[in-house]
Length: 130
Image (cartoon, rainbow, N blue to C red; front, side):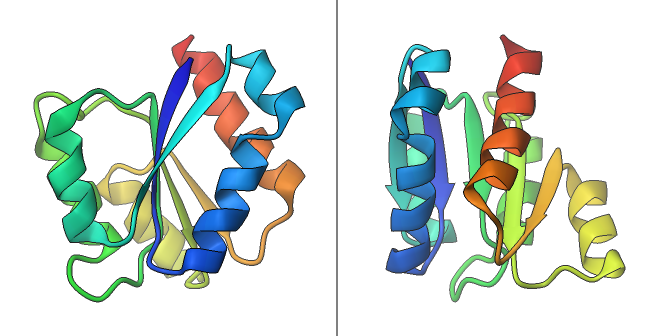
């Protein structure tokens, strides 16, 4: 079973990502997907020490600790520095994407995205780590 952390302040966006990741065809490919939700960057920083995640998905625009600050924290963490990380954001200019990838994100998915686009990105990263 793969454990995935979704960090997103929008309840609707979290629900969409959860439904995409828990799709039986996708989840079964990885022996199941346990989706853990964090409502903000601070919430994610509280959850990270509690266990290992196979992949982290984060938005950029969040009120307390934004996604870029969270990525910086994760990449400096001894326990999570190699965890695959995907940014999902409405901020998707070339500059935004380059900045996110330079901080250590493995992939950047622009909102709005299709379920197949998100599953393809995440599946590719999970396959590399398998």
